[in-house]
Image (cartoon, rainbow, N blue to C red; front, side, top):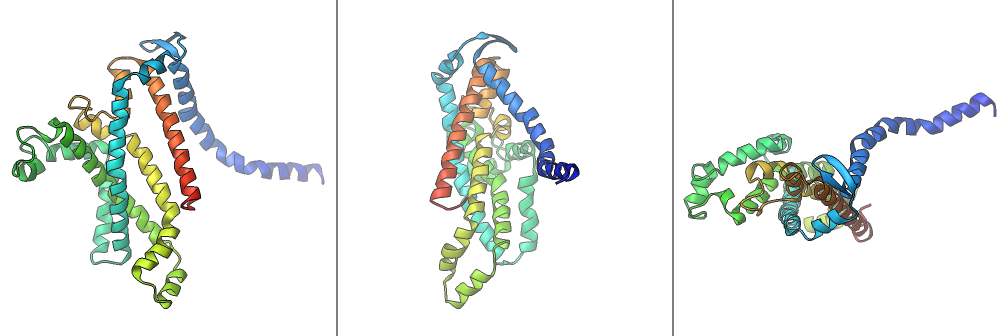
Length: 298
C-alpha cells in the first residue's frame, strides 16, 4: 500500500468523526463546561456570584436537611405522575382513532399541532385568563357556577393550583404524544396485519400481539422524553403561580431559580442541580434497563 492510499484510508476512517465534531464541540461548550463549573461551585462557599474557599459537602448537607427541597421534589413527582401517564394513554387513544381514518381527520391533525407549537409563556397567559379569579371563562362558567371554588380562585387554592398545572400540562402535551404515536402507527409494516386478518385475529388481539410490541420502542422513548421535560417544568409554574400559594406548587426548577435569584445562594442551588442530575440519571438508567429487559424496547 502506497503512502497516498494509506492517507486516504486514514482520512476515510476519520471522516465520520469530523462530521460529528461541530455537534460535539457545541455540546461541550454549552452543556459539559457549564455543568462542570456547577459541580465546582457546589463544593465552594459563595459570596454572591464570586466563588469562595472550598467548603466540602457543606452545601449538600444544607440541601439534604432543607424540607423545601424535598417538598419541591414531591411536587415535581406529583406533576409527572399526574400528567405523563394521562398524556400517554390519551395520546395513544387519539393516535389509534386517527389511524382508523375517522371523519374529520384532515381538520383534526392540523389542530393537534396548535398546543404543541405554542410557547409555554403563551400557554400560561391563555390559561391565566381562562382561570382568572371569578371572571375567567372557565372559572365563571364551570367552577364558580357549580360552587367548586368557594371564595378563592383556582391559583389561590393549594390543591386546585396543582390540579390546574397538571391539567394545563396535559392539554399542552397530549397532542404531541398523539401526533408522535400516530406517525409511529403509520410507519408500521402492513404484512403482519394482513396475515393476522387472514388468521381471523380480533382487533384486540391484533393490537396486543402486533401493534403494541412493534410500537413499544417508540412509546418508551416518548415516555422518557416527556418525563425528562416534565421534570424540568418551569415557565408555566413561574408565570401562573410563582410556586404558590406558599410552596404548594414549587417545582425543583423553581426551587433552584429562587435559591439563585431571590437568595443568591449559588452554592446550595448548584448542589441541588447536581443532586437532581444524579437522581434523574439513575432513574433514566433504571428505566432503560427495565425497558430493555422486560419490554424488549432497545
